[in-house]
Length: 449
Image 1 (spheres, rainbow, N blue to C red):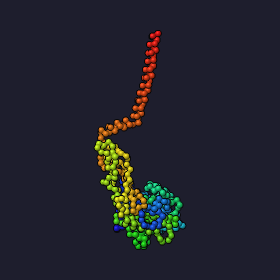
Image 2: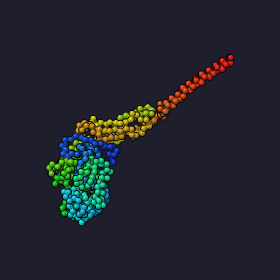
Image 3: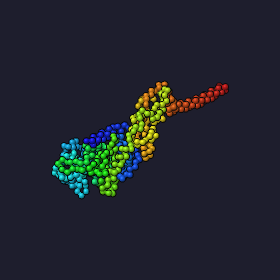
Image 4: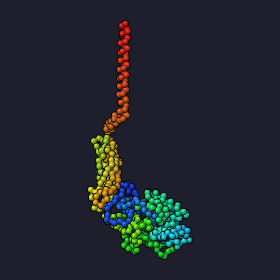
């Protein structure tokens, strides 16, 4: 019961994160730790803030193996409204595509000629990682066309913002053109956590399909207290394992304790010993580090001025204080000091009144630098807003308009043209007067004769 409540809380956290983090864009930090990573790619994200706290080659393309089934689940969940009442016919022809592949199965073949609920098929796919359940679901949602289902997977990946992902099947069997990254897999998982039953299904260690007397057993030892052995981790929740010779061991998992939840993605742990799961070792050590060494702190307050902004056209006031548009809360090392927080601002040289309290004037980027960080780590970017309302002076505005007119290019051109015309006028007038004087002198001479 406690685990279910914890899972529900995690889902709520993820949903809240979608709305709250949009106010303050969160960036990826990469804090130091002493974990000797076995996986080639790894990513650790705090689900409370959406902030990445650890990353190793998270954008490098990797084979995902059965972690592919997270996307398979997403597509199924978006096309089936009632998991318990929707039943799928189990066809031998669909299962035959797995012959000779050495696939992990969930004994769906024992139901050939019968029907299974989508719920039982989802458990069969996610708990023991049954490829048989995956292809049956793909065939059903694709209307008998598995390729159509795979196209849906790729379309959904693009829709979610996955930039380096391409699927060729619904189960994760190796294909050179079937790949993803730790970052993309994290995007998929965070979305999947908002879907019905996903958290509960992926955190199940043992499940009985309707009509069967033998249980489905999870491949994720981190959540199995009976079979997990040294891999079991009481704070772990879900999500999915995956293994092929080419992909190595893969794992997506969540670690939750003391009000904090972290999503971990671990890809390409080479298979050296068949019974050694380096991804689970990585996950345990990184979760333990994050849950004990990091914490959420307010690194910038909307009540604390960041800088002063020069202001024009305000009588008796030359500047206004700028504050963050909202509080900035970030995951940082527990022993951090104020000097570790660096705020770099980007504001104009000056602004004109009137300005209202809360008007966006510029932006500030917050960094962490110091102990426990690999160089300067960007935490967040926030708008800088005016801390007060400043009215415009009518007199200063009029003078400003006059000044702008006087010093404007077109005004200078007009004045120059007028001066030029005057000069031309003076020259022409001078010539005409000179000619007139000469003509009068000639007339006088003629009269004298």
